[in-house]
Image 1 (spheres, protein in one colour):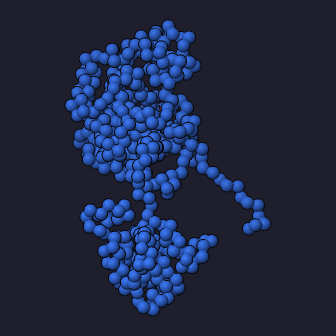
Image 2: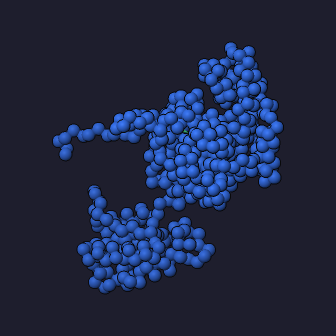
Image 3: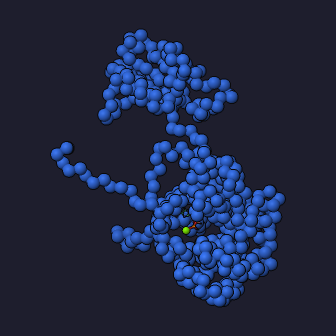
Length: 448
Ligand code: ATP
Ligand code: MG
């Protein structure tokens, strides 16, 4: 081996992150919380493929959006020539699946999904090439009530996660007619201020001028603030819908601000649009974006079906949870089983299985590369495992038919070990570990 040249290491794809064991408990905490919140509102999970036909996104998101213009991982399947894309978002896929399987045949559906999304962007804090979203799609609902419900679900999620610095921004972008009338005035206004438009804005002036309102360029802020507001172009129905959303939110004491410049990236949105934003994450401050997309299902060849949804950027929420000092259970086990000798090893397997039957998390010492199997080194591993107890089986113990049970987290180092008959070990440990209903030892969590 040492004679050979060391092989080059292959590293992961830029902007695509490994989620390591140290972070996994935080992901689990988030995932469990969001799942239980979604369930409490009657949402059902849907899982769609990570790869979809490229046409789905080109048609669904609109040709002149950031995503379709420059962010999609598209490729040809050389086996059959199919044009495919790694999903940059999930609304299009969920709607495709709902149509394909006629999910709304017996009424509207509340759906949710979670998983990785792919966008070829410049990697930076809060912006990755593989990132994760959890989203909800309510398909077949017409009124402002579902828009408000989706927003209240979000508020409950932030509350359950203990996140306080997330605020709601709300707007209505009306329907296509209203946007067209606004667009004419908007383009005229921007043309009057052409000298102030950056290259991005100039490019968008005739393709997607609404997106110019979304600019983060500081030198354009004042000019953009003076632009005609879409809200002033809403007709009676759009106006009433927007008022309906606000009424429900006010009635439920959900604070919001109306941001007349808020638009959403994708073409399929209409009427209600919203974002949950925080100042704690620098410029990547939007943790969730959503809105109504009544036209999308017809664009995909279905019969007109109104719908509304949102998508949460999971990495950004996790960063907030970390910034807020979120305490989460580290990966810990209850018991570490140490053994020496062939008989002891066989007995150790049996005892470990009985302990797992009893509901405990057990790590059984196994031979490892580069580590001695001495009692001393096994005990070091037991300590490092975070286990509360070690079960020790040596030749002495085997001869007596007993196991030694050692407390690993005790200050009383003289009096922390006792011998228990093999068969009595599970009951003995359960007695030690379950300490009544008021127990708040994190390591005993799963036992309650
Ligand atoms: P942005 O304006 O930040 O590019 P967006 O409008 O492209 O956001 P959406 O497509 O609405 O974002 O996605 C919903 C949420 O997903 C965003 O609010 C954000 O939290 C998250 N998100 C979007 N793109 C990324 C990315 N590249 N990396 C990490 N999270 C992302
Ligand atoms: Mg984007």
